[in-house]
Image (cartoon, rainbow, N blue to C red; front, side):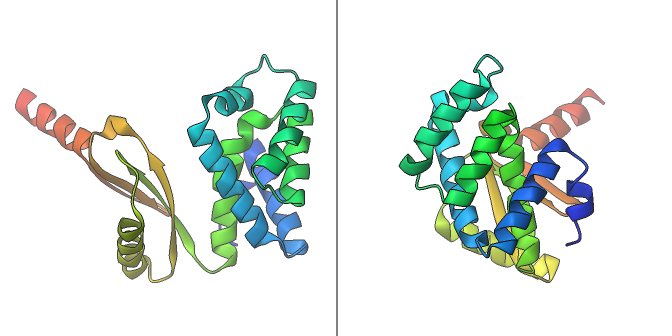
Length: 184
């Protein structure tokens, strides 16, 4: 894994590496990935869950209870459920979004893929994801998985980070460039 050394440098990286290592050793990468996808969707859809994860005011015990209750509701696999309990007990739920992103990268590398971080103003549909992955595969010369995020502040267009490369074709950047040019 080419990125794993750099990933381990952060706190979220250490947690992500631990979860991925357990998932790999127990041959549970697919079920953990599916659970993390459910968590990502729940975080995007629930302001309450987002607050729980990010608030320092929620006690570790309360966070652990909520995580235990959410695990079956979100169809979280047992390994990911235990991992979430550890995060809650250690007061590290705020690291969850970063951990999820890093586990995705580690999983993609394990499958021989690279991950492109894609930001758009509106969610990509399935056809757009497939077309973008195909274009990026041509550029990267290997399979590419898409880690998509929505940021309405870019107004339109797309920002792609693929390894050390960044392609910024957002309307926000184009407008900023135009404003700079007009200033002289």
